[in-house]
Length: 254
Image 1 (tube, rainbow, N blue to C red):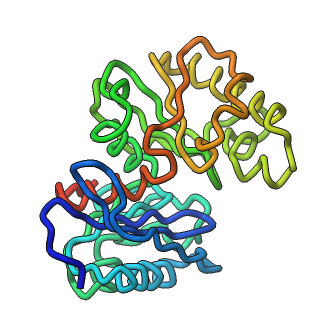
Image 2 (cartoon, helix red, strand yellow):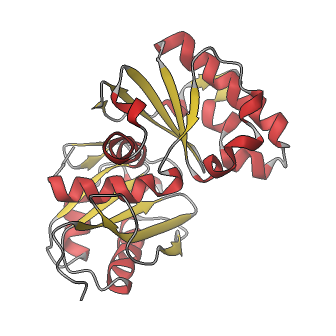
């Protein structure tokens, strides 16, 4: 079993294509174990996904509380939506689900982008603590975390905002770039259009971009013309895992 270090936690980030987990140093945000990853099962039903989470915890030999992100609105322990996972999640008591599959241990379950926002405030970009900040995670979809002076307004799910005859994440997610084989210039301009829409609606002071594509921010950031500063998340694509581990430490239960 993993060493009982009070500064360590375990986070799991459930995505549409992969489920990742690692032990996190909660004082620095560094991963202190391998980042274990398993493909998201298809169909991505609650029990199938929960079994993958159990496997990741076992792979890390972790025996403490577990924080878990889901690509869904979570309110009162209940999944109220299902983005890029099976629709059977809607109405699921996620706290009971994961606690059962993890033999009754303490768990925290929250929206994936909200977890990234929590992590970025505590251990990432200092600017995330100041003013109105909109953090976006660009991956299979577009996740969002709205922050004001470091405080989270949860479950915004702005990737589903109507955009033309579709919605924002179906126009400008990282998965769309790959699926349509868009150049970074073409895709960056799409992201810019979405940022302009968010800017008009919410007038944030700053945008922070997370998700795996944030590692290549310099390949497409020059195509952004929105008036606000736009920065890559300091914690990059690890923010969900880190935020989940913080949630488990703090007993966050949306």
